Length: 154
Image (cartoon, rainbow, N blue to C red; front, side):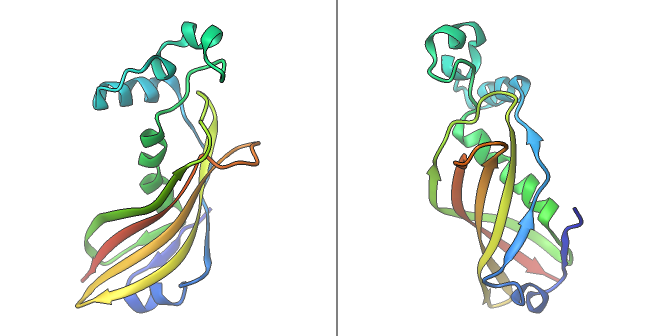
C-alpha cells in the first residue's frame, strides 16, 4: 500500500471525516512480547510463560500486552499517511481507548484509520485519528482509540 502524502495543513484538511486507509498486517511475536515485558518490567505470566499458558490461560498461549498493541500504532499509521514538511511530530494524547480483545502470540494485526478532526493551533496542526487495531481472521478488534498527533509544518 502506498501512503497518502501530506505536506501541509490544507492538504491534510481535505481528509477530515474520511477513511484514510488500512496498514499492512504485522505479526506480534513472542520475542516482541518478551522485549516489551523487559522494557516495561511487566513480566506477568500470561505474557511470558509459554508453558504455563498452554494449561492455565483461557487463550492457551501467551498474549501481547495491551500497551504493546497500542505501541505499534505509530508504525502502522506511517504506512497509511506519510507526513512531510513537519519539523516536529508529537504524540499528544489518546482518547477513548478501549482494549476489546486479547492478541495471542503470532497473531497478525493491522490498523484502520479515519481522520476525525484537524485543527490549526497557531501554526501547529492537531490531528485526531480514530484508529482500530484489527486482528486477522477475527470479527472483534484488539483495540480502538482516538489518537492525537501534533504536527509542526515548516
